[in-house]
Image (cartoon, rainbow, N blue to C red; front, side, top):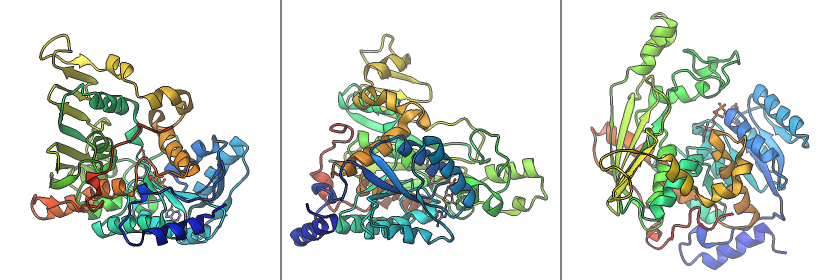
Length: 450
Ligand SMILES: NC(=O)c1ccc[n+]([C@@H]2O[C@H](COP(=O)([O-])OP(=O)(O)OC[C@H]3O[C@@H](n4cnc5c(N)ncnc54)[C@H](O)[C@@H]3O)[C@@H](O)[C@H]2O)c1
């Protein structure tokens, strides 16, 4: 049997003459029915993934790595509850994960650490011959996106961003309708990340940690690191939940591409006001000057002349909504009012119609097939799919449904929007990470998957 290392060597030799995209290859891996995973970062999100992986008989969790003992202890509880063998533990310092990567019996890693670690960890993992499933986001700069692309190409290791919203049930039903032409030709799309993150704490609200107006060392989970990005950066810091599913609907990297964007940031009030209201004017954090505009609005133009409007809105009081709108020549869907309108199909002209019957009728085949497996999985069940698709791709030696080019171009929105805002709303161009291959690639996202 050909080993992964030999496979990589042979395919590298066979392809040095041309620039070859990883998705044109079978991905080599030493798996036989089981995927051997390791988890880097077992905070709240990492634990979600571990919990789902522990349900699977086709996954063996070999090792975990985290720098906080509390998170390791909580993760080990999940193993005990599932009555699965305990993993090897790597901890001690920020680079303990490199020891984990030396293990030979790991096929892939799931990275769920703070954003600033994703790039370095993913690069190290691919170079160590491990496939990467990485939480959003991929990196901080355009150069980092290029490095991820080149490294995935050179190592033949899959890089999949674990963008779960691509598998949200209503979004997939709408994608199904788009593909069947129900909305006509797509013209305009909207989405974003609109989530009041001023107080970050445990979901069940019972834990005594963090929350309130503390962040950094005194914060818990995301408050330890995420709020600092709002201090230092002004741009769309978290574009992929909104843009990922929309990109799939209009074939980005598969017959279409992002061409350019412009971004504007509103004034910055929300986080400061929150701290003053909750902690008082004399709280030390009341002196912090946040750079992130409360609402950052980005407009993307595509090669096929759709417009995509994205909003990042995390510092003001508001209910959660990703604010999807999918609009074509025949009608549109908006998720916030759970309604749609389709000309000559909707009963009353100019009147919204409840989307539910359509969402049921056009329920995506993947959801029909796996509905039972999604029970108990996070975010309404969609979390099941990202891990499932990642594991299946590795098991079957095939490319992941979302690849390094998707991660790169979706995440390029952040540095490009920072640049556009800094230049007063300038139009900035996207790089073509596919180097022209977007013209030939076919969109098979969620079409031929199991
Ligand atoms: N897709 C989704 O729906 C979703 C939901 C929540 C979070 N996320 C993403 O998941 C990632 C993690 O978020 P979270 O909420 O779990 O944050 P978290 O702070 O709870 O977890 C991060 C973990 O990484 C650990 N860590 C930090 N530096 C490390 C290092 N050098 N080596 C090993 N471990 C290290 C921390 O100790 C912590 O346990 C982020 O990218 C976040 O945006 C995605």
